[in-house]
Length: 178
Image (cartoon, rainbow, N blue to C red; front, side, top):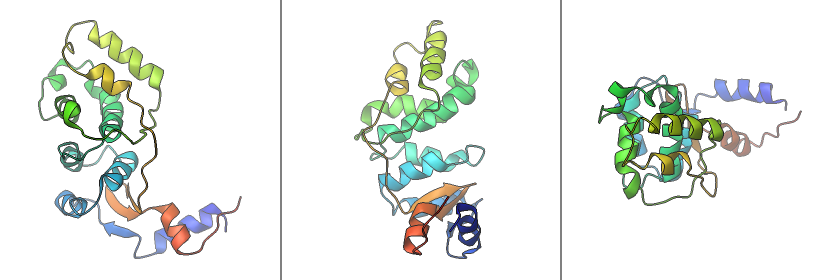
């Protein structure tokens, strides 16, 4: 089956959505029953224009992986946090949560596929020159590389939790062709 045809079937399946968008408390409740593998997959597929509450919850969990935190930092840090003195002083901002918790994230397994490692490092070093980020693990965060991809049956899609497309195709015996 062609990928686009499979996607249409996937989106029509009433069971592909696990938690609807706009329900961060319900998503968090659902995530409490999931593993760090699923948390990472959710972060990797999260639409960062949606609710930060879900991401904040993940980042404050003891079992949050460094790769999960690094992904959020890459997106949020380069997106608008890095270099904004006001945001950098906000202890509730996602990037501040990551820097404050970096040393206690217990595992370091998951890849986070940074969009542009060189740009991330250059931007960070540029903003470190003003002395604002001295004493933080910011360089360790932006240079983090994991050892594997997270595997989960679930992911995020536009603020909702869904069955992962690759899992759905396998479960339904659908083979994607070119």
